[in-house]
Length: 447
Image (tube, rainbow, N blue to C red):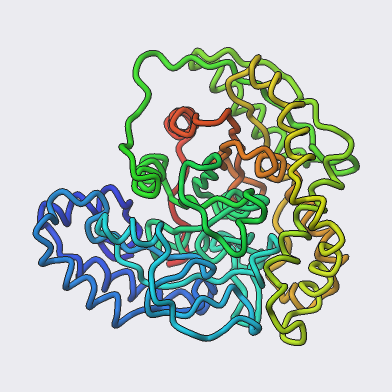
């Protein structure tokens, strides 16, 4: 591994600000790592080698380089957010191959903070599924390249876990940050509604989808969140003692949580209890209709995003998903079920500050061309391994995946932290305590 590829964003930015290394040197080392490893990992749809180096050179002459929080930090951007001068394909042959005229606001904020966009990452078509494969490639888990990196921000997670970039910008409409973060041993934060500008697709999947960070450390996730939210990364002051509920129950009827994932959640709960938090077992009152509501919102979001595209150029699983969703669009737009879910779960979060759960129910599926397989097969694969993330998109509350321990064979395991609106920094603080109590390896051993 080179001296800077594989280092944290916090370390890189400090070194660039102090002129111990130039932005070009940092970017060049990461581009070299991408060139060496990405054929095995499949993280990127597009690598901006020449443009990134030119932007790094321009950054070096920036008059305020010494105060930029992400000075010289290479970042990857999910291929459903516009990057000026590049096409935004969303994993689909049906989308236009035309260059974006402007950066998405979150990309613009990263660049204003000194970050350099090195590439656009692979996603499933229209960012629908929990496996990031499409006509543009298959994003693999760097810890076990026979397995998917997850989805839909899977390419970004693969890039960070492989040390190709220290940070990736993704988004999460049904778990699309937390699922790949959990697969790849990263910190993945879905902010609460309104914390970070969204503007994803045609209506953010009815307001459920949020942009957020993928990082190797809690400090890096906190730093990136501050830039995306245009606020200060202030850690909560005082003695942070929280009432933590731990639940290993699947929110979806008929879907079970595997033993290693349940064990990880219980062990994380024990560590937090040992750190002084008030921890007790407690299951949220998930309604029986949560499964059908999740399916309705998931498919309806796809129906809206696919409405203006040529269906002949969409994969079969996407066409069926959109067709199913069209019958639900009108009902989903009312927001009635989401409001009912918030009303049902709010008393639980008045009694508990934070919910701790497993992040996944089982290992991610094989890294394969799932976009060539049938819709029902995709639906079952996704539902069975990631049932724990969608409720918090429906409520609009913050949730994050935190690495915690390993599975048999050495792949990462993870837990999920969920909180009330506005408590992103408190979740990060708890995640930081878990990071200190159970340190994790930051990048996969690919070299």
